[in-house]
Image (cartoon, rainbow, N blue to C red; front, top):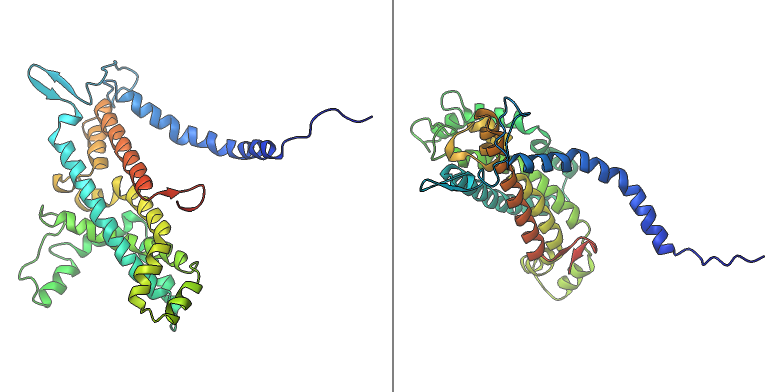
Length: 311
């Protein structure tokens, strides 16, 4: 006797199996990321204090912006918050730009065959492998105005006449943080670009060589366009890290206003001032800013993650 049931749709079965395999990951994300995010957003609408999180009241948008007795209050009315936004955005743009340039240069150099290339490739990963706190403490000693080797070398070369307090001066502290971040993160960018370079088709370069195109024009018209998806992906990853930077700045300069990032500002409100509602509002704004910038970069770069390439 023949069955009258219609045959199962293989596409629907494939989608159902995909959801079954994704379900544990989605549940874990909801627990470790979704719940803390939702709780932070909720606290941003309250007057909760760190010393007693069981007693708080709903204050609406007062932690974000409020007008009372002729004055504006809230995170969005704080000069320190906007200074933190400015410092974070400046740090992100400059550090990621430098890391893209240096990372691409290192990747192009490592893509050429030369003796001990494997050893050099492994050696450049050392800064990236060191934990951020460890590298920050190491650089803090090197930049110390009394014992640091940086001042010793620069004075020996006659570049500076007196020791400079690199991490204590408002004029040099942010540049010192920027230098350490570029030193640490450039190997990560170089690794991504090197992997992308090794996947490029060689037919284009052979055709360019036959047509008499030099290496500089080949780099500009062949390599960089083909690397665009990898560059955009690397920029997104590094921009996310730079926008929420905390440990490097906190170890090198603590709560100094000249280097205060949005994460440092939120931490100061939450821990030092114990104002959970105010700090949660700052954290929520930080999340929204990062989300908007990430979506903008993906849209402007026309990156299609479903196809794994630009449209």
